[in-house]
Amino acid sequence: MSALTLSTSSAATLRADAVVIGVAKGPKGPVVAAGAEAVDKAFDGKLAAVLEALGATGGEGETTKLPAPSGLKAPVVLAVGLGDAPAKDEDFAHEALRRAAGSAARALAGSKKAAFALPVEDADAAGAVAEGALLGAYSYRPAGNAAAAKKNDKADKGAPLAEIALLGGKPRDKAFKAAAERAATVAEEVNRARDLVNMPPNELDPKAFAAAAQTAGKEFGLKVEVLDEKALLKGGFGGIMGVGRGSDAPPRLVRIGYTHPKAEKTLALVGKGITYDSGGISLKPAGHNETMKCDMAGAAAVFAAVVSAARLGLRVNVTGWLALAENMPSGSATRPGDVLKMYGGKTVEVLNTDAEGRLVLGDALARASEETPDAIVDVATLTGAMVLALGNRTFGVMGNDDAFRTSVFEIAEEVGEQAWPMPLPAELRKAMDSPVADFANMGERMGSGLLAGIFLKEFVAEDIAWVHLDIAGPAYHESAPYGYTPKGGTGSAVRTLVRLAERTAAGDLG
Ligand code: BES
Ligand code: MN
Ligand code: ZN
Image (cartoon, rainbow, N blue to C red):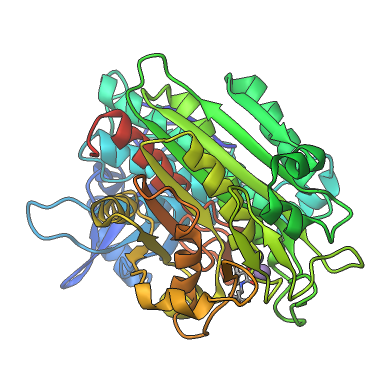
């Protein structure tokens, strides 16, 4: 990942390949944002006029490259649009800063070092700029495949920025330093989740994913336990085994635990980790299976969030459960009509083998409940219905506790992840009635994203606050990059989970 440095230098004197400044959309044309004073001075105070003459408006995501005048050390100025100028006495929204920094970092791919002179009124704003720049500079670099990495660089118009220098803050101020350090850690972990999602499914099968957890566990002092297919069979994990049995790559359940000696609360995070979802015997048609390596994005987010908690030394226990399996059709695959005995004893009639996420999660939620954590959050690319309902950029937030669901939704908004609360209407449960099992893994089509949530609820102990995040839309970005969001894996939900852990550690939540 790119390196982050804090600098007291002026934007005029810092040695860099480019200086990034902000430009907002004002009522009468582009307005140069705070932080760019030294740069504007080098333009004899005419920077806004120059930008307007070049057609810049200050609109969100817009980037304009200018040759620097002689008063600047850097040869290039990059003006990045911040969107509408805030009302008088108001600062830019952190998400506007984060996205602008991301757009700038992407536009500077191919450069070595850029100085970011965006408007940072306080430490949190500086953290947002750092986070956006580090996330925007991401590029998937396949391990041990230099040729492919080079190709990606070309597609992204050059190697990602090697160094990001943050100006305008007060590097000697503890709060600024802490915000920058936090941003670097969180961005690195979001990028870890992105890497896992982007890995081809023949390279990241359940075993390889579990190995990655073990490696990180050693590096960051986490306790990692892996149940292999033998242990899963013996332990009665019928959901995970039922999904995984059609594949030559056997399933795994990983428990990755971070504990703090002074923790008062324990948070359990459960992730759907289908390393490839073909649909199984209920095979997906062509057109629906090309991106299904992304079906482990929930587990990747959980993994990255637990590692983040450890690296940030949060005063809370965080237990991650990664429910890993590959959903494939074969002679040994689960058939539509089979009945599975789930962990904890409930039976499920599998009517559609493509509704596999709820089967692996059911086992993991029941297992996580046994440890009586204070709260459980599961993260899953669970249903196409949620994508139809909320689109490609927003995840659904459901749960058994309205106050907790509201908290998680508000936290998502605070960290700049688009989310929306969704209900779990009790009447949908009846559609899953089965003549041969406690219930089926499918019901009616209408509201099927909510129905999936109701299925999961069956496996959560009733007295534990639980939230379900359906990230099927935002987990994998197929169209053009924007802001700090690249093509491919996005790292959706990592920042929400990390903030949730921080808030739990601070005792802000019930
Ligand atoms: N992994 C898919 C959901 C998905 C769809 C994720 C699009 C990302 C993008 C999930 O396992 C699935 O196939 N769900 C089915 C459920 C149905 C068979 C009840 C769906 O949503 O169509
Ligand atoms: Mn599926
Ligand atoms: Zn799936």
